[in-house]
Length: 177
Image (spheres, helix red, strand yellow):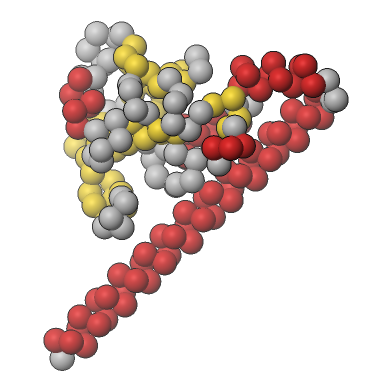
């Protein structure tokens, strides 16, 4: 009886992990197809003019691990650059920020939580902030909230930051996908 219960619990955890993996794979394929569509659109507008394409790419290309990400301090209104930001192109999670950065930025908690599955595959409840403003490549976006937790200073999520940037014509270097 105890072994059977443990077996069923492990089987359920495995099924949930496999389901999460499939969701993440679908999200990555969606992002990759949107990137391909943007590249095709760019190519059709710029034709064979390589110089124009190179200039456009330099202006609109984003780096997954080295992009400047700034968040507006909610108390002072000043923009603060966050070292160690990651643009998460392969995950369907919303943007996250560490508790230390939340405090440094003066971000208030909303009282709500969200479930986040981290690298340990353990589903956890993370608190959410009040709305925040994020700036990447000069583009300012207001997010309704970000999840607080993890060890990456700010992990820019696919649904709330990455997808809108792709729709605005930004691209990722192919060697970073």
